Amino acid sequence: MVSRKVTPFKIFNYTFFVIIGLLMFYPFWYVLMYSLSDPTKVTLNNLYLLPNGFTLNTYAAAFRKSIIYTGFLNSIIVTLVGTFLSMFLSVITAYPLSREHLKGKKFFFWMIMVTMLFNGGLIPTYLTVKSYGLIDTLGALILPKAIIVYNLLIVMKFFKNVPESLIESARIDGCSEIRILFKVVLPLSKSVLATVGLFYTVTNWNAFLPGMMYLNDRTKWTLQVVLRDMLDQTTSAIDTDDIFTSPENFKMATVMISVVPILCVYPFLQKYFTKGVMLG
Image (cartoon, helix red, strand yellow):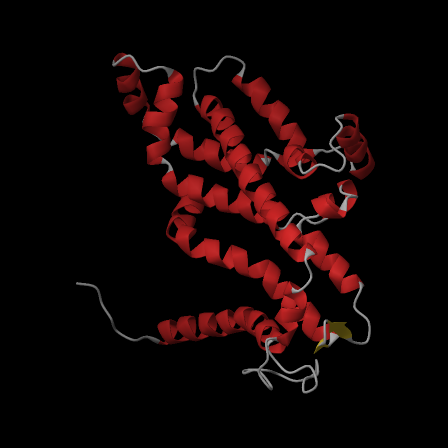
């Protein structure tokens, strides 16, 4: 029978993590409450538990800019296509590397590891992307980081935990390696796939520097680049079609606009997250 006795350690433990949780949550709550407050009644020095003069004018001002919808669409395309491509490449690369009978396994493994430890730098990377004709295309945000080695190692380590006897049984039944991967290994790897998929999703959604470097056409900008441009255009006050808001409120609202989509995705993957990270 599990003991439920209250001990000083349990009290300290729960108190400590409640405090840490509140310290992590409050900045997000502060940004949300500030963005919902009346621009004429707020200052950055105040602490907000509730909106000070509730209003949605700041969000109305942001969403009345047509370019924000273009940014949303481009970010969704980059996130969906980039995540699918990254997951596919990571899986088909990690599976053979996780099997002991692969010839030249050590050579391929260390060739991949070199790319994790060393990179060419900002300018050589830009010149490489330009040489492939990817400038001003969404492909420039997807292809250069199609595989993140850290995520690949997590998937590879997880695949190693799949019992070899199970794979041998599938081979005896006449399954090819491709069929073993998709019919046997992947159904057992939902937790790590969800975890790494979340990593790739967040990476693609938050892509900012590549967008600044490679995209000149405003119609190709992702949401992060659009929001940065909108913030750069803020002055002492913003007046968008008779909707008044302050630069500070506008900044808080744009932060929330960029964060909410990821917050909507995370709850569906949370149950796999801890297990995937620990086992990988």
